[in-house]
Length: 156
Image (cartoon, rainbow, N blue to C red):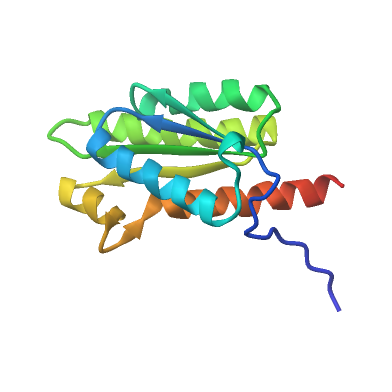
């Protein structure tokens, strides 16, 4: 029989940073509310959650890296909304945000949950920020809780 190690969805005693983009704040504020709700429901204490705001999704990796380097957090939750427009700007911002956050996680060993919406329309973003498709901020926080707990277990 194999031994299985996995994280629990129990945030008690874990510390989290939430990095949230201000651009498209009508969406990212909803993602933040979802993430905070998930953390609270899972037992995180208010003093164990720090919110850091950045201008947009492009800046998420830099802030996440600075937070991870502090070694104070069990996991980081990155929240943003990149909505396709009429120019290729969307492709650059979305791709660099994703690869930058992945690099932070790989370089630092601190889990970074990806809660950056990349949608074609505002309606799709609304649906994913508390509408009919749930709240991806909530989902990202649940991932952060599980990974934060898992990494603690693996380091023991």
